[in-house]
Length: 281
Ligand SMILES: Cc1cc2nc3c(=O)[nH]c(=O)nc-3n(C[C@H](O)[C@H](O)[C@H](O)COP(=O)(O)OP(=O)(O)OC[C@H]3O[C@@H](n4cnc5c(N)ncnc54)[C@H](O)[C@@H]3O)c2cc1C
Image (cartoon, rainbow, N blue to C red):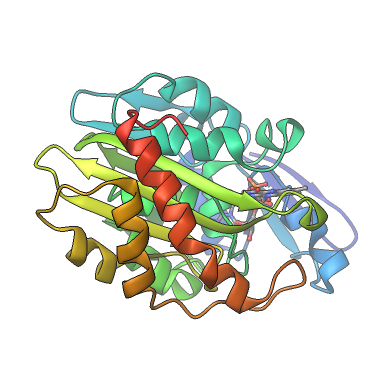
């Protein structure tokens, strides 16, 4: 372990997950790509006194594509993920999320784990894409690891991440097609105002997830129920989305809550049109 101690801060640069977990147990916060954490002082949040960096842990940089699932290391960057899953049937939505988020410089550095673990960031693109694909996350703490559904992780992450290291995201290859559409406003920089991710399972079941509209992304189960067992056109999905729109939009500097909510049905139509074309938006 290479440890440099400054006047105010301890920085651990470790080579293994076990060492990172030990550092966490000793109170270290995680530094992944740093694109979010480095801006904490500008948000009035003090940088942690002790930090463990993940960039030298080879195991966390891997994407393993298997027949039934894809395992994504937490420190894989958006660009790395996009490259690794490019062309994989069923994962078009996740690839679009990794390719469309932020800008090229951020995508080369920002990680999958960082996108999932940033607590106060509603506009994370990978989160709805992974919800639609029914992904799981692997967490490690000093006394062992556990795998849990991403929805459970999102509900409990503020508590879980006080001690845990997110090590992997596991995406089942159960979808035949998926799509991810987002509405950015230029004046809002690169953050999307609203995001809709959809996936179709091999049995025909549809999953829909929405990001950036509420403080935390979630599945749109009322719409999924309406769509169950039906063959519908993209225009019909828009009408069903208008009927089942139960989102409470969050107000933010780039858009008001009502607007985020109102754009959702049109995004649903676009997402289903992309799904019909095999996921290409
Ligand atoms: C200009 C700009 C535009 C952006 N636009 C978009 C966009 O359009 N869409 C989008 O989705 N995102 C966007 N982002 C956000 C960007 O994706 C996040 O900054 C990024 O996902 C955070 O990843 P990171 O690896 O840099 O995390 P870091 O900054 O290193 O960490 C972020 C948080 O997650 C924690 N953390 C990180 N990894 C782990 C782990 N493995 N286990 C436990 N905790 C962990 C850290 O402790 C910290 O609290 C943008 C960012 C910038 C700066």
